[in-house]
Image (tube, protein in one colour):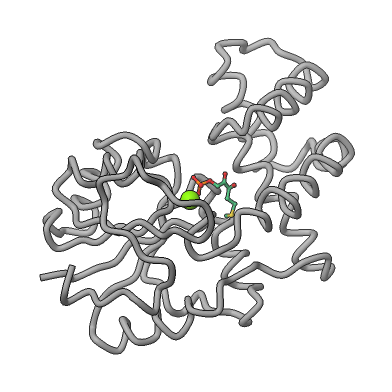
Length: 227
Ligand SMILES: CSCCC(=O)C(=O)COP(=O)(O)O
Ligand SMILES: [Mg+2]
C-alpha cells in the first residue's frame, strides 16, 4: 500500500519549457552581476567553496568559478553548487514578479486529493530545496508549499542513482513498496524501481517507447491505490 508520493518537478508538475526557457535564462543573465554583488554573503561563500571542492580546485578565483558555472549551465550539469546559486538568483525573480512557478492544471487538485486520502507528499528534484520551495511558494496557483511534508535535492544523491531512493526511503522511515515516484525521465524511474519503489512516468509531451514504467499524461489519471 502506498503511504507517500514523491514527485519530480521539471516535466512532471511543471513544464520543461518553464525551467529551460524562463528559469535557466534568468539565472544565466543575472549570474555574474549577482555573484559579484553578493560575494560576501555566507551562503554564496559556501556555494563557491562547494564548487571549488566539486572541481578539486581550492585556489580557484571568482572569475574562473563564474566561467565554470557558465559551462555547467551550458551542459545542464546537476551540480549541487550551481543549483544552490541558481535558486538564490531565482529568489529575486520570484520576489520582483518576473515569473511565477509553472504548474500543470491537474497538479494541485490531485495533490489535495492525495493529501486528503492520508498520503504524505514529497518533492525530489535536482533544483535545490530552497529553489523547490520558491517554485511552489510563488506558483501559478499561489503558495502550495503546505501540501508537501518535505523536499529532497542532490544533497541526497543524483536522481539516476538507486542509492538516492534508498536514502530517501530510509529518511522517511518507509519501505520502497510504500513509496510512489512520479517522474518524466525513465532513467530516474529505473533507479527508483531498483530501490523497490512503485513508479509512474508522466508523459507531458513526447512519447517514450523505451520506458518499462506505467505511463500517464496527467496527475488526474493517477490512483495511488491501484499502482
Ligand atoms: C526547482 S525547479 C528547477 C529545476 C532544476 O533546476 C533542474 O535542474 C531540474 O532538474 P530535475 O532533475 O528536477 O529534472
Ligand atoms: Mg523531470
